[in-house]
Image: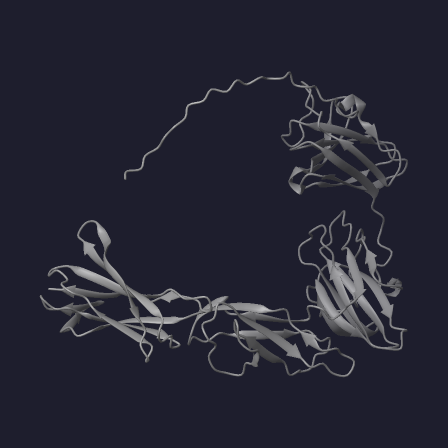
Length: 466
């Protein structure tokens, strides 16, 4: 039977409805810029009808523009941001202008991000233009940036309850001469927090810098001791430590100092000891007989050695301690690490790490009178013998031999294939009958796998009949 295509030609009648006209937002025009009357300021609106009028100032190449205006009573450092509900990729870009008699004058530009910083002088009117790549619901916010009150160690902000969140304020933050220099990322500005454990018991604490504005290398460091004589406990963008009863811990958040630094948002919370023990591996797929490197990572809040056990559970098999040896080529072997715990610590069990272990398959050609590079050589009229091996032994199951011939100028083409039973020693063999003289061949063994085991195939073995 020969297959072909049957086409159906149809004609559809399209009825076009007159497009509806969307109402423009009230601050779509420069002349109607919405006033920012007080700080903090929040304005939510739908930008679907926004556009760009003839002669209107373009904002970062956008075809949709909205306007706000701000006239501070006192000199103010302003931070403005806009967030689109649909996607961060639709967040507007912003430019701030003043409007002297000769025309608009650019004061601040944020075409590369959706956050704008502005030093607004008292009594002067500033216009903030939002250029929008998309349309839809939008939130515009503006707030004043005040000098950091916890810039100095002696003015550390107290952490009273958990979870503790501080959006941060690094404006005018500096680095004191006696600030410790052994943090993860020594920087030019820092702010301080402190916490005293009054619970009477050990408390596992997690400290993290929340996603926010990127000022390069940022970190938080945990110390004990007094000013000028501090001992580092931990540091990182996220770190854990055990707060001992009656001890005061000092947390230093730091990063690059910039003119309008809004700080480093920080969260401090009691940890539930989850995710503190985990495994990494050198690969997610390996072959029977090859070495697999597993590394157990334990963060137990104390810089001391702990004994960790790693267990493996082959697919359909029993869980066992992994010390050394081979794991069967199962569909999925699950590794898991455990720590028995200790004084003041609970037992830790890592998340599961799943590794596919493929069967080891090899092809060998018997006989021949020599080699030429990667080719085994056979005389005309020979019938080479193929031996396929599968490890571990899968006696009674089938493997497939595939033979290809090289056609000059055209590449490799299938010459023949067949299935053969694996014998008691884990091998199967077959004789290749009548390969043509003067041609090059290649052969490989394929173990297709079964309901319990992962299949695999051997590398090609090459031979030539001459």
